[in-house]
Length: 219
Image (tube, rainbow, N blue to C red; front, side, top):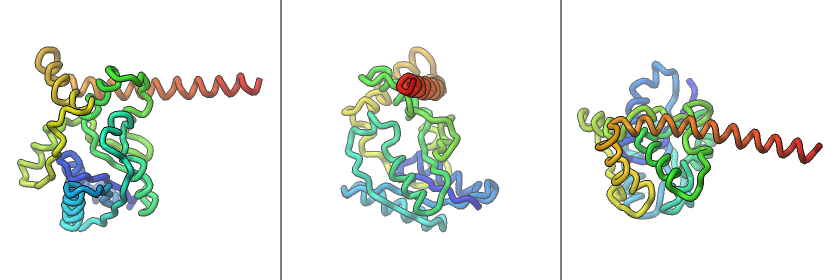
């Protein structure tokens, strides 16, 4: 079976992802490895302990590493955890890294990009192909919480969920609810899909421009 590294933070989305994959691992013919990026704060250490215990409960191998990501970088890096998770995947021989980005996350990042200083959409959202896969993009954060609570599965709460000190949090707590209430209830899903298309177009145009520059350089 192919090895798959699942990035698990201990929060609801990643725990739901891991439990879903564990249910279908035999059918999908995959061998799961739980990957966790640990921090040094007491909260982060508690997260690591929780994820390790969860992996043990599911009889899955557990691997961990650190990252120098600092608070706030998630607003400029579409996935600050992907690089260390990819390195973990190489270490355990996994060809695929799976992370738990939901349509809410995707919508928040797209809005933050629209309203931010960087107009580039490259890498903001990637389709579920290649080494990095995001199978929860069609689903909401609420759906993940409901899946876990209905089955009595535990998860760690995010202490920063209500903090209005980052663009992503402002999108989640202020902007998106207004859009859903007054414009479209299905706005997160539509924004997530739009983000994928914009990221693909931006990547294509960027590569085309680089190729053209090389041709001019060597002409």
